[in-house]
Amino acid sequence: MADGILVKDLNAWFGTLHVLRDIGLAIAPKAVTAIIGPSGCGKSTFIRCLNRMHEVVPSARVSGTVLVEGADLYAPGVDPVEVRRKIGMVFQRANPFPTMSAFDNVAAGLRLAGMRNRAVLNDAVERALTHAALWDEVKDRLDKPGSSLSGGQQQRLCIARALAVEPEVMLMDEPCSALDPIATAKIEELILELRKDLTIVIVTHNMQQAARVSEATGFFLLGELVEFGVTRELFTNPRDKRTEDYITGRFG
Amino acid sequence: MSALTAGSALAVVLPLILLFGFLLHQGASAVNVDFFIRLPKPVGEAGGGMANAIVGSLILIALAGALGLPLGILGGVYLTESRDRRLPWLIRFVADVLNGIPSIVIGIFAYTVVVLPMRRFSALAGGVALAVIMLPIVLRTTEEMMRLVPASLREAALALGLPEWKVILRVVLPTARAGIITGVMVAIARVAGETAPLLFTAFGNRFWHQRLDQPIAALPLQIFAYAIAPYDDWHRQAWAGALVLIALVFLVSLAARIATRGRYSAVR
Image (tube, rainbow over all chains, first blue to last red; front, side, top):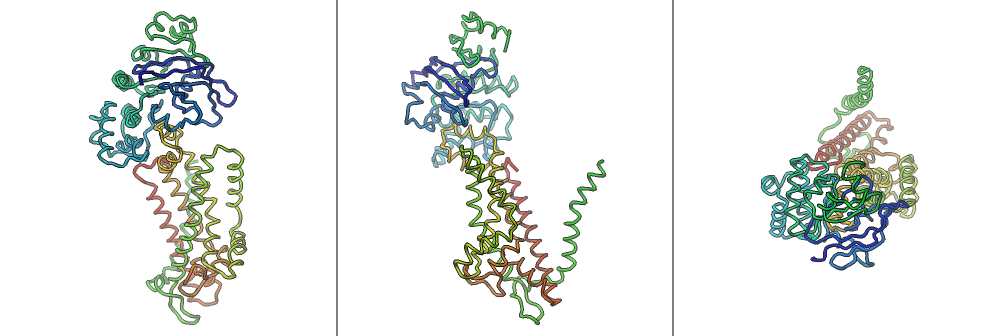
């Protein structure tokens, strides 16, 4: 757990389109790492490679190594299902299961994996919702459909759903891009809280957000990792001209 | 313009209203308790009912459903989930062709593969014929409805560390449930009224059915037989049969509408 994630020579394709080129970086444990870059630079693809979600898309391909706790996710014989159980993910748009209540949404990961014990489920759901700073808002509405909550609540419900299976790493793919500033602030607070227990990698379009929540930041451009370093330094004193152009708003 | 569209919409439902009114007018007088609980009387005797045909139709629909629904739904799941390109394309194409084949031809098919080897007309043969008619409808609606389930839900479930089959079974299928049920109801309504494929498979029976390998009565068959007979009393019963059949289909459709208004259903 203390090893974080070590990415080496990571390449990814969609069909013949080479979307990630020779990515290498080390993600610190129990810290927030932000990935920034213009649309289409491969940053979403990059985090989808960290829990083997990239290969879900037909024609998608990956090469390279991603070491988590020293074990390569892409070694032969590794079950992607096991990988995803340890490395959770939150998506751009809140996507609660529409056929399930708020409670069932959060319980889904455990219940569908075979957990039947009601007391264990109740406990896990309360813990996950509390962890996601949503318990007080929804504890009286647990039997209502997850889709009846507000946008920000739905996103936190999805975070709770991902937390309930107790992952070690949480990947967040622009989790606030569909939310208003108040809901965004809540999610950011939550991220700062979660980092005490989890390794977090967050993709964001919003550079202020990266500056606010992350310790380390990587700047992606056209499928390459241009610069990776301590967030404050990357934003105040970028080493690469392209990083400087991007963070000063000259393109992107 | 709006008058034109409204007029067209009215013209579409007018035949149905007229048909239903006409059926009510002609058949309502012969619909009574006897009609639902009695067997047909011998030629020349008044009264009797179509109880055997009503039960027979229900048995045939159940048989067709038992054979056609699992195949159709599982096949639809395959069509959505398969990563292969050629085989699903071929299956889709064949299913669409099958959907357009005249039902009498499907009757001949069931006659050839079930009636001839068994050397007798049977409920089973009728069920097979109706199942073949249901298959492409159920297959294609299942596929379409599963495709309507947003990819984001699938990804969310996969990202929870669930194996693909569980994602399909517990997240994708339930989300598409309402739409699939509608497709199933459409298929049932369709086969409930089929006559041609039953002529030389289920064959018809003037008595209570005994076993699945024996001929069985069905409402459309009974209506056909009574309508072309030379007796006024039988004509009235044929009208009544048609009315009951339509009411049956109507009730099934209504049940489908209510079933699709499920609390959490997303795809309608």
